[in-house]
Length: 430
Ligand SMILES: *Cc1c(COP(=O)(O)O)cnc(C)c1O
Image (cartoon, rainbow, N blue to C red):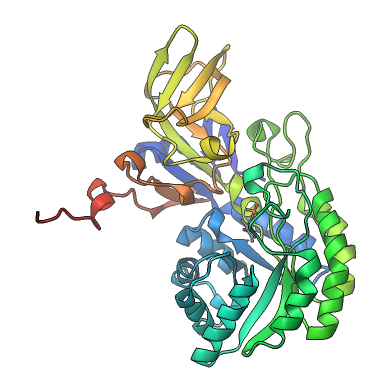
């Protein structure tokens, strides 16, 4: 579901009017729904009930402490990609023993830190990394739990920048080489070969690539598990969400775009994959990011100016690509709606930010209701890969973040002070 809807013409997140939040906390403002986070986690958790499983939230999609806390309280583990992310889990009260640690460039310091926190597993991306983990573990007297990431060479059919499971990508080790890698890993000291991992891409709206990848990899897992005594198989993340017309589709059909295009539901995902996974008799790990956080967030932004040129109607807003880079980076679509519902004809508009880049836009030639200076707009489905990719480009402060729970709301990240942007810098004496 998503918890953004109009009540008496005013856009609400759960039972809180977004106009009140914009008024109180200013814009640009990220707003998250705790009900949506909980609902999506629970739907997936229940669909997977036939399996011994652990959901490891891919916190790179949204690592706000309150988001981590919400999911940790539901029992979630975490897919982390840096020592900083593991530290965040601990800072939010999560359990490092439910953390997996992925990424192609883990440093010795990060490996040592993760070992000392007794993480669940390293997801290893190369043989050089296996050797490094073995070396660090030996040095500090720990046994490192590891899973190698297999690249199954399956095209996820998604955007090139979020395709990860083909041989053109930097991730994982080729399917054909995996057994040799495990045989050599078994000879390295202080490693425990605990499982196998894969992740084929992001924003998959069809179950087929998952089905192909699991069908291809499951027999390999069974063979390796027989040899090395595995505990788990991680099928990665990548479950897609609705970006287009999510609001219009409403709560009951949150998985369906207005055009009727159905995206993956947890039930369809489970119905397809459980029969393939259950016979392995292993714990199954999942690493969903976007599915848990994407629809749970909106970015609120105020209209500064309307600028009409011969060709275009520009709606210039106070949020920019430094707040939400997805349209510039991935050509992403975010539904844009005014907080105050507007009737009447739409105007083809470009919604752009104030940054000095042509790439600083949120929508092009989009039919939007006629809006004017001071109106506040919501960019929907901005909870994943939104604020986490924020930057200080153009010396713009990072936006504030608010978490809503029913009628309550709390600031879960204060708006950055302007002077804090350069607090780690200094001028020189010459
Ligand atoms: C990014 C990533 C995920 C999460 O992807 P989503 O599409 O957000 O579910 C999971 N696993 C790995 C290894 C990733 O890199």
